[in-house]
Image (cartoon, rainbow, N blue to C red; front, top):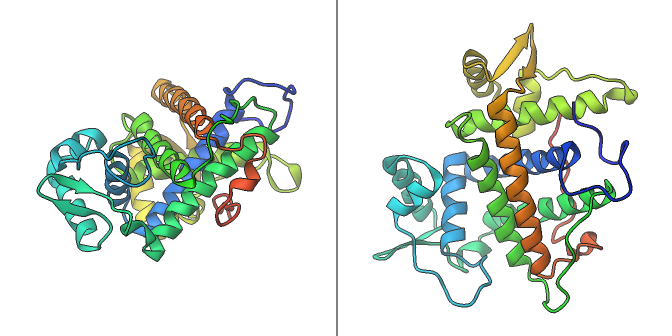
Length: 293
């Protein structure tokens, strides 16, 4: 069970531990729900995010990176070439990424597309909410670089990096992205409810319907993939109640993601993000947590 943010914490806790893990996991589950809403497929969302980070408008370092090849993209996200190519072509046809002889890129023009802008801005604001919650939970945040003006495009890029980090860190547990998202949703929901159930009572019961609601997936799709996770021993079931399995791969994945998240938060601070007053950085406003029902 993960402790509630702010509960039993000292005033200045390190940027690590179960509270940190819980907030990072909440960011990941929320971002995956937004990605599914935008792209309809986490494969497409990951291809977009990886392309944007390789060659896109969210990297504020001097100079423009070269377009990324589909081969390089497939290797970076751990997907088969044909799967990556198929989703890349769909994104090109949808005008979300550009294809040239040199490879793939995300253009500045593409990110003003209303649905895509809503997705990237929501990811940015989920990152702002993560920083806000960590500060309220008494965790020590890295100091803001005061010699640079914060550009929200940098925050979007770091938010996309954190989504990719969640997929990469937990990927060895489950290679199917939809099942991986459901696995993380069950883990987050179980931990959240176990800590703060209705009326303050412990109520960690997570069912298939809760997992479907958190990610906005159809019940039939969720049920089929949950069954596969149970069959693989990644979840257990008591009647209709789902339970996460805290085995060695799960612990290793959580540790890997926490390490990467700390690095990314440090980079966010170096971009001039207002760590002491994160609420001033929202674009659209604070995003709600996943809907547990």
